[in-house]
Image (tube, rainbow, N blue to C red; front, side):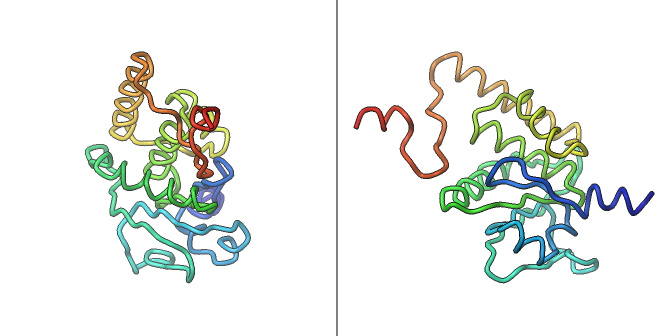
Amino acid sequence: MRRAVFESTCGSAAPVDEHVHIGGYAAAADPARARREGYTHVLKLFADDPSYPGGSHRHPGLEYLVVGAADEPDFPLDRHFAECLRFIQRAIGAGGKVLVHCHAGVSRSATIVLLHLMINRGLSLAEAWAHLKAARPVANPNPGFWALLDDVDRRAARIRREGRAPPRPDLAGRPPAADRRAG
């Protein structure tokens, strides 16, 4: 039973879209998986810890962003939202593939992937949640992270209602649709 839980969390990764995968630390430490999946970037959501396999591992040739986030409801993960989104956007803009991971691929990484789906893909939190759960059923942000996401969702909905939402970024590096039509 313990092995099955490990494999479904720490030892697994799943695609969320063509450029973003979500997983646990053991999946991130597997060089064969990194090559097979074509990862170019890794967003790691816990501090380096060499006391266990994969705790501070780096694959040569991959770009890393390490955010020393704790999976605690009062951890201010929102202070890192912009940095994480920029890292994902830069990777996608370069045609890369990002593995977003924490220890188990359940809470911290799920929060950042939901944020990616909301901001970069223009989904509501409910739509992003349905999409993520279909890709990674074990995803489950802690209550504090849910509150942060809910706040982002409310603010984004208000901006859309007021007509102040910028065009969704085309993460392939092309200008927004309105700019393409104008040319």
